[in-house]
Length: 283
Picture (spheres, rainbow, N blue to C red):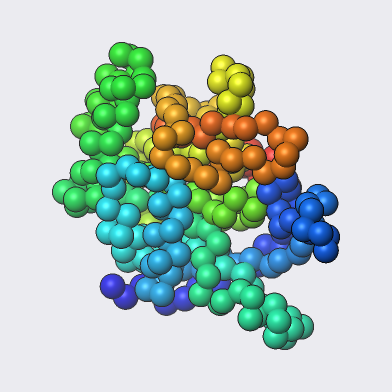
């Protein structure tokens, strides 16, 4: 399926210096702490050759859930003027070694929205609705379950996807989410189906294995802002779905953690304010 014309947005330079950054090893192979690296990223329109990168990011979100992520990837590519994939930007000063390490087609993240209501008859969206109903039935309160069932039947819904590699810093989320908000604002003037009532987001979180009642930690730290603005939310463990990036020990002294997913639903008119708060948090 052909994608829209490539559109390169303002590059966002980010210093990767978080706990999940590239490790530095001595000759003995022992880990000696994090290594700070600098990279310039660009948000671009998804294109056909981004399919496998987008699919990989959706897989890390949904894990073993029964969702046709291939079909959803095609839907995201087919949307004209809505959503961005995160690519590493290169300029004339970059050496050949840097460009050999990273392919220009590599996708490091995606920030987009799926129009659930207008694609309600599409199989992957039907699977998504079934997944939400099943999860809320098992893990949410009766009140939350009833509210979700009503929203799925009666409201215009958008599914916000905000996925990236774990070692990409949160700073990159501000321009990506701001761009998405502006794009939705533009397209809904021409296409009323994008005039959503609510947005749904699924966030990756974790808690220490020894104390599952402790405060959750968001893999994408900016997504805690979405939770604070949520009208409905619930979480569930995915410990049995082999989310290795969040279940193992990064360092010997780290506590082992249990991976979760948190479903967050909020009124669509809150998005602008959320983006403002995210920008203030990560800058």
